Length: 73
Image (cartoon, rainbow, N blue to C red):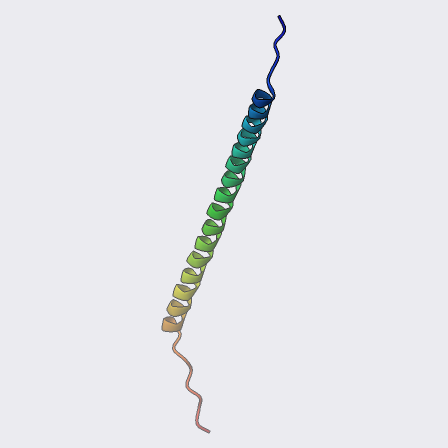
C-alpha cells in the first residue's frame, strides 16, 4: 500500500508552509524594527540629556560671569 497525497492535501501543505514562513519572517522583521525604534529613542534621549546639561552649564557660567559693560570713552 503506497501513500498517495491528494492534490488538495499537497496544496494545503504548501499553503501551510508558506503561512508559517511568512509568520516567521514577520516576527523577525518586527524584532528588528522594535530594536531599531528602541535604539533611536535611546539616542534621542541621550541627545536631549546632553542639551539640558549644556544649557545648565551655560546658565551657571553666565551667572558666575556677568556681562562686561563697555567703557564709555
